[in-house]
Image (cartoon, rainbow over all chains, first blue to last red; front, side, top):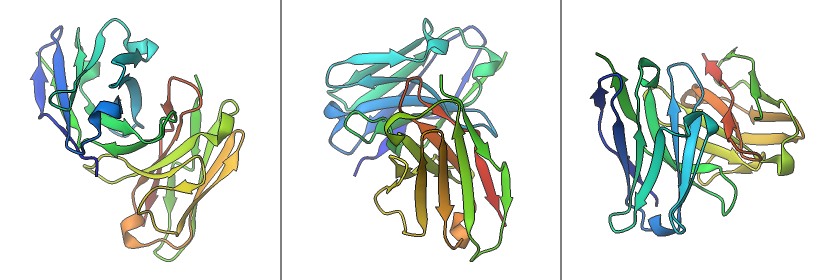
Length: 120
Length: 107
């Protein structure tokens, strides 16, 4: 069974960067598509981007292009999301989630979430 | 991008009652590529349904999904205490993959 475990809470200064990790203990990481999403209180999840681990190809939502980088390390079965130029609007919970379908992006396994707080 | 509008915002029901949640898309969703998720406070979303009407692994039969084109529905036939939560629909027909704002099912 896929289990995604994310890194812990982060507190960052405005203008800085944050890097969140997502470790897959399920054993199928190398053939996975790992998505990153974020969620503000009382809102639905917002898709940020994804990485096809096998081909090392990442796709990003237009909104985050230029300040989001998604990577994967097959040797440690860990995915990473790095967001730069942080503002207070980036103070939300970030999730990684695995694509469930072969090509279809429904998300069948989620990490527990990582709270990022941006404050001076 | 496809905008998903969920209604109602809040559904107040009692255990044993039937819940009907709606998700309307701003344009046609090809191949009925709609998923539904349940989220409880402090937890990550949990997949309930994909391809509009296929239950995910381990999801009870009281959950069912239907719909096509722009209108999709999640039905919970008889609410149990553990079903009181927020429910989100998601489309994965056209990137960026988008979610609705959710329907809260409360007692």
